[in-house]
Length: 121
Length: 116
Image (tube, rainbow over the protein chains, first blue to last red):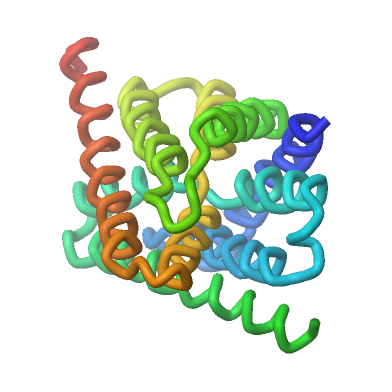
């Protein structure tokens, strides 16, 4: 049952990542991977929000929205691959900026999500 | 197709996390292993220059759904709130360095094996 909820959440999260990434890249149109940056930061914010909300006590809701949706909406593999591409074709400073900037922004987002959930809840 | 791939990848992540649970204040080995192995695989996959459908199914779908950035960020916050600052920083930078080395290793292995 829990596995089915993870599958359902991920079946929405992964295509949502693809669509958001494509929209952001079409809009920004730069070599910098703003699309992946955006999904990772917003997904981290959502997971922080969920983790500090009333939903956190419900295993089914965590499986669906946390493990499933947020887990599949965000990605580490594409982030790491794009960092490698920046280092190889762009510049090392941009690769470093993407790596450290994504991590810093992702952490800030998770804390912001927790804070917002506590203020609202 | 991305939905099916993403669901398969997430199921693998969920399964690994279920059989390898992280104790409170412990190093999140399951998500660390998921992210590093997923990076190794995407480096390997992309070096093969797969056709678009294979790239979308395996890369965007399966590996995108398998690896996760949100759980990584939340794991860090949980270690900090459990007063394990040392483990939190080790996890944060350990994952980043291991993931970047893994994607490069996957790329090199694929190129060596298929001599591209």
